[in-house]
Image (cartoon, rainbow, N blue to C red):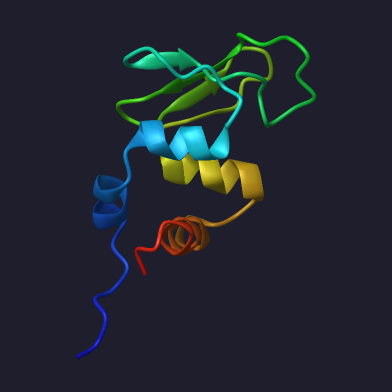
Length: 99
């Protein structure tokens, strides 16, 4: 029996954005529903917490200081690690034991 092809919807549905961001941003105070303070922005030399926000329902993120933004956990991993979509999908699936 062969493995099913890697599917973005399957991976996205298997990972709660709260769990994902708690793993990726362990020092962020993720406590509220929807938009949360994501701590220091991982995309620039941030010294002022509060400008980086993450959405715990959709996985979206936005830094109001440097302007980096994306719509889901795949976009976050692509931007953070400089990966293509497929590379980010593969990384997340591997990191979370989904592949």
